[in-house]
Length: 145
Ligand code: DQA
Image (cartoon, rainbow, N blue to C red; front, side):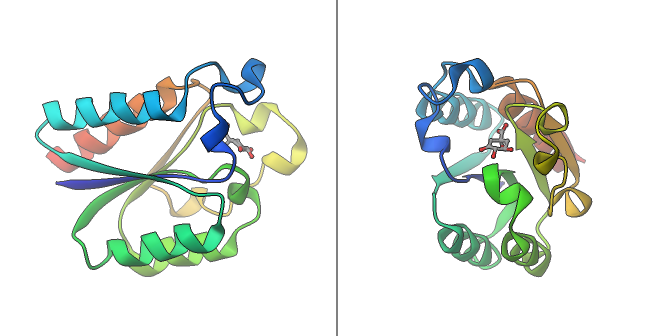
């Protein structure tokens, strides 16, 4: 199956961005790990990071036509602000997992609300770069049944 990994604003800075919160692993390393894991399971994953809301909305819309079976998304700050991302995910009706490196519920109150969580198959948060692997494994298990 085709999977899509989307990363929102500032996640291009992973590795150097607030390492105490987000760790030292770069996004390129995370993406490479997911690609390997996906290929080993006989699937394909496309990865896109953008700081722009409309780029993410456009990619989600395109996923409806390109056969994407599952979306993994770390919406970053858009988690807490974006009705547009929510509406795009609702429109395409492709199952998705919301994921975060940190646990937003253990942080500032403005991070406690997500515009996406109630539409998600599930949410993985708080495990650093492992959140991506855990989310992928959950998606692969879901695709297998
Ligand atoms: C984040 C958590 C968000 O609150 C924050 O805005 C991010 C990253 C995470 O992965 O922990 O940019 O999504």
